Image (cartoon, rainbow, N blue to C red; front, side):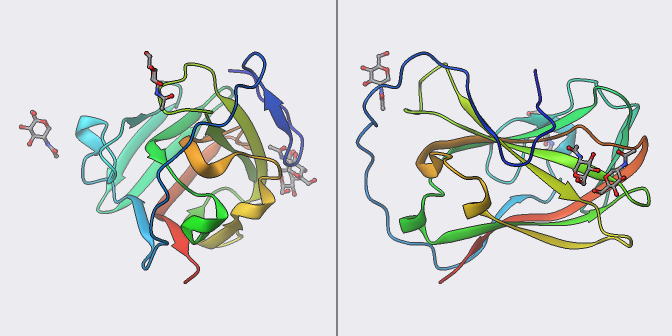
Length: 179
Ligand SMILES: *[C@@H]1O[C@H](CO)[C@@H](O)[C@H](O)[C@H]1NC(C)=O
Ligand SMILES: *[C@@H]1O[C@H](CO)[C@@H](O)[C@H](O)[C@H]1NC(C)=O
Ligand SMILES: *[C@@H]1O[C@H](CO)[C@@H](O)[C@H](O)[C@H]1NC(C)=O
Ligand SMILES: *[C@@H]1O[C@H](CO)[C@@H](O)[C@H](O)[C@H]1NC(C)=O
């Protein structure tokens, strides 16, 4: 996986764009959508029933209650796959919220992967640099910050490029409904 340490850069990894797939129009959200409460951590499954994990890239990884602890080192990443989640504006979701902790003055890169259709193999990645709060706290990242991302078919989130080694914690990971 190749990451660019650039704020909100879109990188097309697929070939030429196909016409956007017609998607069923869905009713707008009426509540926040929990992504992972880590109850299925042992089975690498998140709250949306999709695969999650670190591909053994972390120095250590564990869950206590509903909090994930990641001991990051060079090359570490952690991903949350999504079942073709519609996060485009009409969906009503407008932010990704996560309670985040980590070493002092650290940051990480959040990658959103999107596809032109659910069963496409190619994906496009858009990145966002997230500053970790001095004391663990809720960070809300507006989806509009992922400039140009085709969020109607979002297939994964990846946390990577932890800029300091050490323990990072993630909990209360959800998409915020802006109803
Ligand atoms: C995020 O931005 C900060 C401030 O510009 C920079 O110091 C840091 O290296 C960046 N981190 C990543 C992972 O790009
Ligand atoms: C994990 O999967 C096994 C086998 O399917 C199942 O028995 C177990 O209940 C699952 N555990 C969790 C925490 O989902
Ligand atoms: C990591 O990112 C933070 C937050 O942007 C920044 O203050 C710090 O200088 C960065 N540290 C390194 C080692 O790049
Ligand atoms: C999924 O792939 C099949 C062929 O394998 C194709 O016919 C179908 O249109 C694809 N679905 C979408 C939503 O693009």
